[in-house]
Every structure is written in structure tokens, then in C-alpha cells.
Length: 203
Image (cartoon, rainbow, N blue to C red; front, side):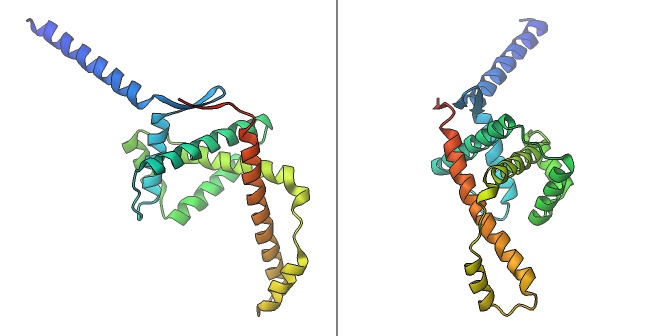
């Protein structure tokens, strides 16, 4: 066999092997109307969580994978819903939120970009997650704002238990805490309601 034919044969073997590998890692796992979640999406999310929780052991069990899939489904639904309602957040808000998140996790941009490069993950992965969450929070607040009524009697009872110097400041903090609890409750309820609007198929 000539050298030219030999290298040509090697090229085709490499090409088809790579193509098959890519197909395997990009199988569609779930479809949500016209959107899909693939094996590659799951792999990215697992790698991202392992990176973020670097000080914790993250076992990749079937239960863990199922939780990842459910997280990705929820994220897709939130994205579709917020786009449907034309909810927007500014770049500055997103950047501030990313900065706070990375600061809290003690991760700098250099470490984050290094992780993206090593795992072949798009550099706006975290940004997209934060953007979707912010848009969803904004949507929930818009829809349920009139229902964020806090029981002031309970707040005053809590105030009496404390020995705070600035009662008004603490009162505001307690009201915000209670409102956030309500928002979390409305968020979970609205998400489950939203899921019923779309055809979710496990493939």
C-alpha cells in the first residue's frame, strides 16, 4: 500500500470514529416542544457543578443524573417562558450578579476561563444560567407582586424576641425575608404550572 493511500485510510478511520463519538455524546435525551436537551448538555452541567463544588465530593449516580436532567428541563422552561413574556435584564445587572456569584464562590475569571477551555464549554455558560434565573425572578415578581403581603403581626413578634438597636432596619430585613419566602413558593408553583403548557418527552 502506498503512503498516500495509507494516510488517506487513517484519515477516514479518524473522521468516522470522531463522528460516531460526537453522535454518542450528543444524543437527544429530552425534547421540550421544539427545544432539546442532549447528552452533551448533561455532561457540561455535570462538569460545571463539579467545578463549582470543588470542595465537595460529587458522585455521578443515576439519581444525580436525573436531578441534572430535571434542572436542565426547568432551565429550558424558564427560558422559554421569560422569552414569551419578553422579560429582559440589563447587561450591567447580569455582570454584577456574576461578579457577586464568583466572589462568593471564591473563583476568579482566570480560573473560570481555564475551566471553560479545558472542558470545551462556551464562555458564557455561567452568564446564561444567571441571566435565565434573573429573568425568571423578574417575571415571578411581576406576576405575583400584588400577593406579597407579609403578616406584620408575626414580624412584630419576631422583633420583640430580638434586642436590635435599629428596629426599623431589622423590620425591613424581616419583611424582605418573608417576601422572598413567598416568591420562592410562587416560583415553584408557577414553574410546575408552566411545565403543563409544553410537551416534554424523554427519548
